[in-house]
Length: 383
Figure 1: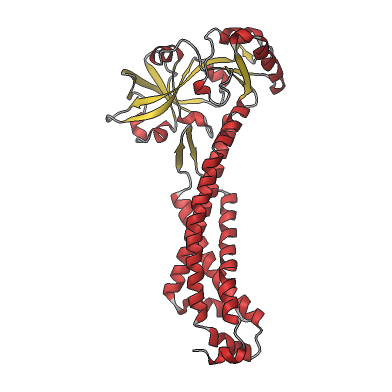
Figure 2: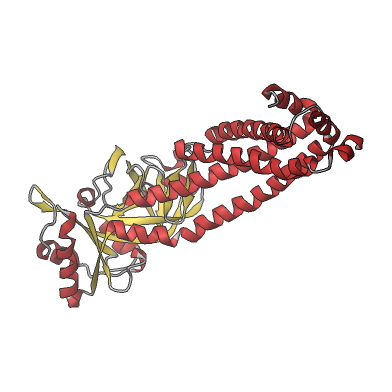
């Protein structure tokens, strides 16, 4: 076998080609890492947003979108009294009547942005125990409470949506009374308002849904039976985890498009890298033939060329990993129903390393085989 330092020294023969190879591999690896991290982040936030203990009572036929659902205002009280197994603390059952309303919100500085406003009562905190108020208070009439990442979803600065700031909904000025966190869920991108205020501002008497929290997920059958028996209420019962599972399926085409876009850009970079290696190896046909004439086999020379390519691609992988940590890790990405945080974890790092290794291996084989293919006498005469 040729010594490894032989392959390492050959990389420095043409610094421009080396930079092209490293840059191309870094771009491909960075795109793959970004695609993996974005897909994982979207799946993670949608998976964490639904609890198997929560049941959503929706209007029949609106199981795919809670915003299109309409439920009678009296359904919350009837469900609280008629469904056994609902969690109860200090004599209060965990039943949250809610309105989910999408509309443009007037923001500080004259900006307007579409926001998901959830009309709630204090019982919402019993149904969504992951919600923690980190600043200010729960909203009263004329107030709203903003999720920790709502500013990112609205496309404004974080300081523009702080406690005491003013927002406008349908011409009505509302004060931000508090900030809440619900780590890893889409709730953090929402605006919460008192249910009574949203009845008036949205001009609707009905609810979007009723959310119940059960003591045991197995009690879902009781909630489902209640929805099927009360035909007058026209309800459909769904586990909250199943509802967000449907949303994951709904956003699957978006995740596929992320992969396709990354693949198209990466394929261009790979082809450019292969072309660079063709030029680099073609100028060394005579050198490789000389090594064959003194006893080194074609397999040995092929392995040395693969080492060169892999070393350059892994250098690009190192640069791409550093760029991913600096530019992507911890960045919040908004999408239609919320936002998620990109995390460069072990899975993403492993995907980058495997991509870099495959680029070095597969990118070197075609040009290396072509350069080693000519018969030895003909190769020795090549200039």
